[in-house]
Length: 87
Image (cartoon, rainbow, N blue to C red; front, side):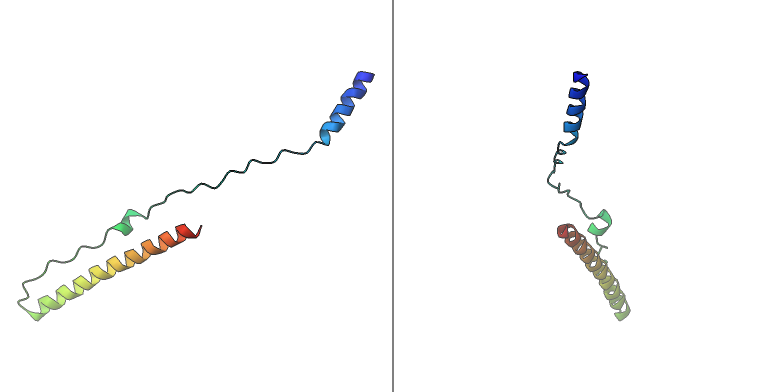
């Protein structure tokens, strides 16, 4: 009988114990690189012989398109990096 009382007392006292503190680990930083698609710009066109104004105008239009492609990808990479540093 005394053994039963002792066991019940131990069970009751065990219920009063405080739970363990959870282990908190520091957050890990993971290096994430931008997608490869954003790291390559459209190549610049070959400079024409410029025999006509039309050839020069077409060259300028293609050159501007290549520059716009590169600028838009650079802006996308900039936004990508800014989002990574905000976290």
